Image (cartoon, rainbow, N blue to C red; front, side, top):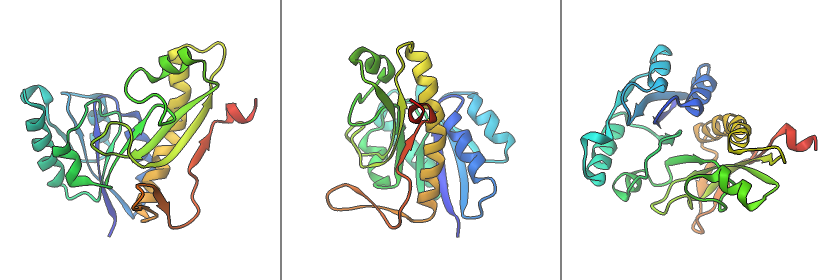
Length: 216
């Protein structure tokens, strides 16, 4: 049986698109649905053209965050996913949603965690003067941006960078790392041990390094 994935997005969903494109010729991966919390998102329009089921659950219809999370939980569960993938889903989720998907809910964050949790990661990286930056794919826990790390991608920080150019460089690595992790999940290669660290059943690539960094 193929592994079933539900992907949550907010906008154009470029990481979602990278995952869907990777999965197109895979019999062991089924994208069960893509769900947006915003109306008429570019991402749901694109993925509907690929023949994938879509849904919208608008957060503005739920004044209480936990009520929205309960409705989202029930909607996601209706698709019977093995894993839930957050791909640019710009909402902080509460335990109401997170706990039913323990070790099955995955996010990508635009920094090398544990550095720069939260928002404005690229601006903060530049302000701190770091020489490398990147992204992290991790399992989601109720504590924001501290779940078990699955894989990371690294890019150089250039002297000429602003937040936009740095974000664009990180995004290219995101489009490599996230489909790779979905592949690992589809093949049951990952587990979380008692120390809340990710273990791998075989050697897999867990560090993705930008060609720009290798060339320096």
